[in-house]
Length: 312
Image (cartoon, rainbow, N blue to C red; front, side, top):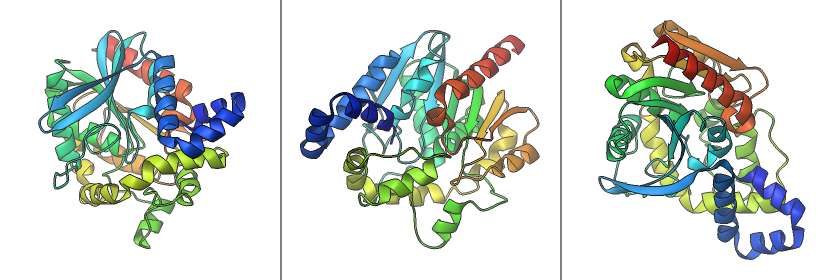
């Protein structure tokens, strides 16, 4: 999902070679696309051991550390274009959460919000980052918020971008599907890819069939593991609502009003439990503002960070 724009550009430039690579070496094509996207943003891929997990991450830029946390089924590869807008002012670190991306997955381990927040704290310690600015999208926002609540001394500021683990006053289309026994975020076949995109983006991009093949190649083998992780996350359904009053860091709430996964009414829940936050609501974006409009969303985040630093 995170490399589709680059895949399309490659397809336009070298259609025959692109088609052959997708048909006969989709894994190679996916890795090549990810590497090019990260390199163009000035990010370097690294790894570190955190307890039993090897954690892969991107790093680039300079200044105070800014930790960016991806959502369910995504990876660090969702952040390069967003990070590029911030790296002149901040040292951006974007990990693959354990269980996702290039980080290890251990059968029998638990990947709920509290456990992942604790792993992030140990990740921060392993890199000797000190107190961090932290932000996340979707379940990554839930984990970032949990981190801010449980480790206030390690949190300079918080970004909640279309986050979950909170009461949703108006059920989303996705919640209705879940209630009906269907999870559109778990890709089990090529035909599931367009459905995923219809939920992930406010205005879904036209997906070339070969690009869909690349996305499916990465997602389908992980489907059963993702289902296990999802059930663990679902147990934290309303966790963050109860933790909001423990968050003391300056907080920015960012949301796409067209979100079909986590309805914008969750912002009302945040308003009811927090008084010291700012809000940016995009009428034309959906579940992943950092990908749908990386420049605009990153610049709004940057303005908030700079304002918070001046106030602090």
